[in-house]
Length: 341
Image 1 (tube, rainbow, N blue to C red):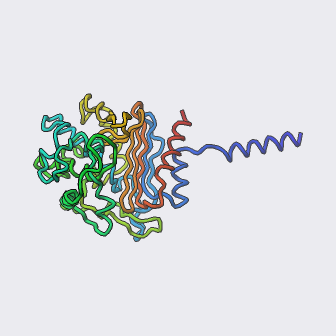
Image 2: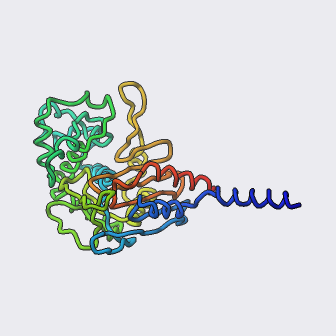
Image 3: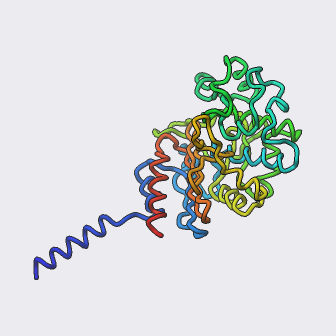
């Protein structure tokens, strides 16, 4: 009898020690381990399973993060740029197969035949400025990126033949939006996307912007300041919150911004020269019925992952970038969502 009770106690202890953690418990573990400081929203089939804000927006004065604290989302801006271009297409102001040089006269000769479609899906062949131009310079503006492109010997590969992620390409898209709309990229995105969706805690950071005191300041893993230092638009520059990004996700699902044709086209993958599909549509990495985008610059990191077959998404934003293992966190949360089915 004693042995039976002992074995039962052992099995029970093993069961509870091996109990899989919930979505919120995973976030709390990352926070307690010093790997996450920020906000998380996780929605499963329309039900909120995690909605939390942890840590500080400024470590110096211990001001706490709230669910309405704007974080720089870096490259998560790219889906917004893509939607901006698609809105112009819906207004019959451009075609995806138009040459970018029709709208941007400042492009170098080797890039004259690069199409808007190729810029959207990262098959343009334009060199990425970020790891070259940013080595010893901050506060870079779009014109400096265009000047950088002029100094390149040519395309990195024939346009349309390969996939290679290019922030430069999305800066060109941002310039196209400004050229066609007759207003700055920031004002266009604010007027056509952020305001209509009531993304009240989101804005585009550019040379015209004086950010409010509520935004998060960025840090490295040692909590030393490592704040946002770019003034480019199109490739990054959006500050937002998980709830605002969820409004954007919902609008795409419900066709509030894009018509049905464009909503489908956004996730279609181009076929490359080797006959295989690429991994990037119009502003999104696509894998089956899942889409995602990450963002990272200076001390900011972010991720948005979406299941297109259900109202399910994972959104996390942090201002202690180097400490946060984005993909490991995302894998853990996806497994938790799958486990709860």
